[in-house]
Amino acid sequence: MASLQSFSLRQSPYGSARGDIDTNELSYQQLKVRIHERLVDVLDLSMLAHVAKDELAREVRTLTQEVLSDEAPTLASDQRGRMLDDVYDEVFGLGPLEPLMRDDSISDILVNHPHEVFVERSGRLEPAGVMFADQQHLMRIIQRIVSRVGRRIDEVSPMVDARLPDGSRINAVIPPLALDGPTLSIRRFGRRPLQIEDLVEAGSLRDDIVDFLAAAVDARVSFLISGGTGAGKTTLLNAITKYIPLDERLITVEDSAELQLQHRHVIRMETRPPNNEGVGEVTPRSLVRNSLRMRPDRIIVGEVRGPEALDMLQAMNTGHEGSLTTIHANDTRDALFRLELMIAMSGFELPINVVRQYIASGISLVVHLSRLKGGVRRVMRVSEIVGVRDGGFHLEDIFGFEQTGVDELGIAQGEFYFTGYRPMCLGRLRASGIRLADELFDRRRIPVKG
Ligand SMILES: Nc1ncnc2c1ncn2[C@@H]1O[C@H](COP(=O)(O)OP(=O)(O)OP(=O)(O)O)[C@@H](O)[C@H]1O
Ligand SMILES: [Mg+2]
Image (cartoon, rainbow, N blue to C red; front, side):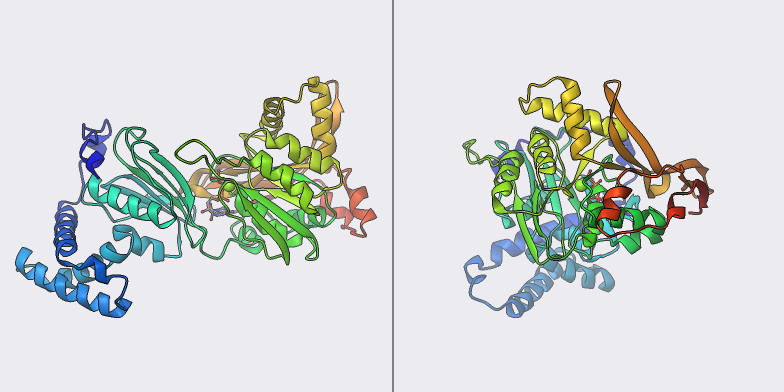
């Protein structure tokens, strides 16, 4: 803990933006931290392991009341009640984050600074209405989260990415890497993941687009889901896996397990970072390679980021059609360009044309997503990779979304469009006994509201 004292407490360049903090709330938090410290001094920590939880909870409440009468005898009774609950969360839970973790409408919790906590609800970022007393307080909660999942964070390894027991993903960065003090981001996955019906309801895609994607998944057409950070790539990937026939054997490879597949035969694998001595790393590439020896029907890579792209493509080209993955990219062409770079990183020294041909024969569709103004996520473009022509990818758009403006609430408005293009992969769909109405692909535009 000594290293905490050495945190750079210099003024944040954004200090002025945090100038309007709620001073009542701040003194409340400071009081809570003082009570907690005194409590830790008097609580017999050795008894924690032996005493039943309710008894301990009673003990903590009684002690809190005693310390409270001493520290803040004039505290209003509603504040006193709140303090009893909050000190409990401080001792056993995640302090100020505990009520946020219980709130199912929150999808992300972002702590930029002890006094600046944001949450995302229904796609929109808003102030969370909670704060930490100071950097040490925030640091203590970060330490607790990290140590609960068997990891550590300190000056030697100041960055941790981990999964909580409830499936949420946490990322913490502390000084010296984080210049203005510890920061924490929590992506909540413990809740019921969004289903395809929820995505249609939210206007992210339409039933007719779902019909096509579902048929493609069922018929083992391989595809790539691309998009920027938080665009909803993992969510869509998770949702469309329900169209994979239940008897297929699926192997998932992720950096931090987020997918929640409902299949009977699912083997989940997670990569491992190197330990503090720099050994023991297990890369996505070695997991993808190993998964090929596990008799998979399909391989699902949570997100391709590096040389594992080559092994995944090899799988897609050699009998594991229908494999799916996501990629971070700004648009469809950028996604393919990044894939080429990743393949180049794997030491596959072949002319670019051959690499492109390999991508085009392994992957049939690219579904690109965006997070638009106001937090709405949309399927922006579904394209088919027809092949390679004149040295470049020959892509044909099947559907898309065109943003035409924003409404009075700042929420993106626009139209879904169907280009009239009949995908080549329809042949594959027919061969697997799936027939889609021909009108599905008729050229048309459909405005969407909200
Ligand atoms: N269509 C949607 N409508 C509303 N919210 C969504 C939608 N899709 C995803 N979300 C929410 O957005 C957040 C980010 O989703 P997700 O993790 O799927 O994005 P991602 O593109 O995979 O992000 P990353 O770049 O971090 O991998 C989640 O909290 C999720 O619940
Ligand atoms: Mg993701």
